[in-house]
Amino acid sequence: MTTAPADLSVAGDQHGDEAGQALFDELIARDSRIEPRDWMPEGYRKTLIRQISQHAHSEIIGMQPESNWITRAPSLKRKAILMAKVQDEAGHGLYLYSAAQTLGITREEMMDQLITGRARYSSIFNYLTPTWADMGAIGWLVDGAAICNQVPLCRCSYGPYGRAMVRICKEESFHQRQGFEILLELMQGTEEQREMAQDAVNRWYWPSLMMFGPPDDESPNSAQSMAWNIKRFSNDELRQRFVGMLVPQSEVLGVTLPDPALRWNEETGQYDMSEIDWDEFNEVLAGRGPANAERIRRRREAHDDGAWVREAAAAYAAKQAARQAEVA
Ligand SMILES: [Fe+2]
Ligand SMILES: [Fe+2]
Image 1 (cartoon, protein in one colour):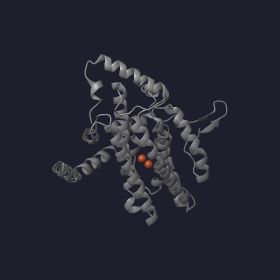
Image 2 (image 1 turned 120 degrees about the vertical axis):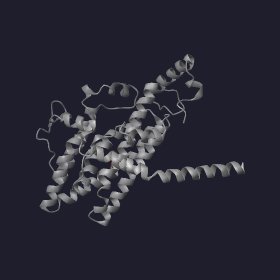
Image 3 (image 1 turned 135 degrees about the vertical axis):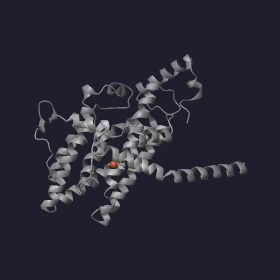
Image 4 (image 1 turned 180 degrees about the vertical axis):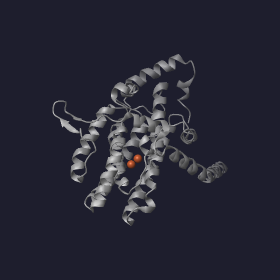
């Protein structure tokens, strides 16, 4: 994939850049879509490459904490559901890598950034999954937060990203329901099962709130992303929306959200909540979470183990191309 249509990418082509910028501005002002063939500012392209590749990495790394439980799922039904869910996440990664490739970065470059530790992914996936209830808490809280973040991204100005998100969101909503249902069953079980469910909610609640990113006044890139119609709501707005979804669902489940200060505030029209521990967030982001090293090590291993598959696929593609050339 080249980085831009040839007629607009020529260095120093001032006229092309100006016309391109004018068209780009007009498309954004009309809330229309930017497509891979369109001229776009370098900042827009770079922001999207970073965001979409980080998103793809999160889907792929996010398979690990749950695949940990596939062999130990408590029943055949749970095992089948969990396998389907983890496979969905692989599919999300693939749609997103493809969307990022339309912006002029290769899959190899992105994978290299990930396995050499130069790329970020959502820090939530650096937490451990010691109990079965973690599968419930991840589905309910982590996939739930992902939905709140991603539904507005279906309207992202970059066409391939927005379209990928439509399909991804449908699957995320199944993921959230299966997590809710795991917790519901545990909460209707024995005292020990209820405790296990509550313990998992206690451990995942705060990290799931951190998934929306730093508070608005400490999120310097947000304004530009909003102006480009990539981002539609601020981090704090989305966090509020998420908590508003969780409160009634936690009542149905019978679990307690682990924040004693959490209550609806009539005056502000928002939930009051305790301060998030941003030191913990920054520690995990800096690579010092419970499982950062393990996640990258396993990703690197999987990449090395898959080398023969990539070689075989490339050899097959070359053979097919040669056969086609012979016919033509
Ligand atoms: Fe996903
Ligand atoms: Fe998911």
